[in-house]
Amino acid sequence: MSATSVETWSGKNRGDENFPVGSILIRPRLRRHIHAFYAFARNADDIADSPTLPEADKIARLDTMEAVLLGQADPALAPSAAALRASLAETGVTDRHARDLLIAFRRDASKRRYASWEELHDYCRYSAMPVGRHVLDLHGEGRNTWGASDALCVSLQVLNHLQDCARDLAALDRCYLPQSLLESYGARVEDLRAGRTSPQMRAVLDALLAMCVSLNRHADALPLRTRSWRLKLETGMIVGLAKRLRRRLKRGDPLRRRVKLRPTDVLIAAVFTLRYIRIHR
Image (cartoon, rainbow, N blue to C red):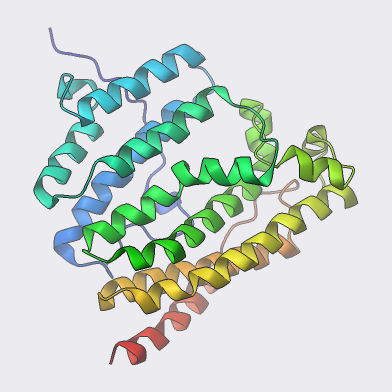
């Protein structure tokens, strides 16, 4: 009897993300490896975010994905983990980044609230930073790129939390907004169910958006530090999209409707990346 996969794909794919995932800007021979990493992350995230799976089942499934990744379980149990294992063997990239992601997804399976910005940032250390680090390692970039990449990845993660703050609470009783920040502005987690942003909650969102401004400034150095001209363009595009999404969230109300990037934002971010061609030359 064949093994049954523990993975539960939600239907989301690379096109649903705020930023390009292994776009045509990336060298063709590397794209499939980025896609393999994304598929692994997507399947693990879908397990952690399932509204129906019990906590213990989520943890067990994530543990199985790690076992397959490490070659300790039947590959059929987690096809995306098996595919990533093959990718890592071919490229020589460490499995540490993928295993770090699983640490974050295990937290998602059980953790519902975050006490402080420091606690949220530690979560992003595992949920977001490994993505950028994996891509950089895949391209053979130096560790001097990690700091700017980490800042960009944390910014993107926080922006995504703000986009989905009402939906996360409604579907999973999960809130990433730091409790200390809510208390300092007189806001409550339950305010996210109101369907509109109160002045107190707006102050919380703006405080987090201000942190993203600082993170995005740090991220500006990433395209400058990468050696691959293709990666310069890809990371420059992502930095531009992060800035555009922050502006959208500053003006919009994520409790009324999900604030999303528009085609004009992509166009503006694309123009923003052109300067890196000149820098490369």
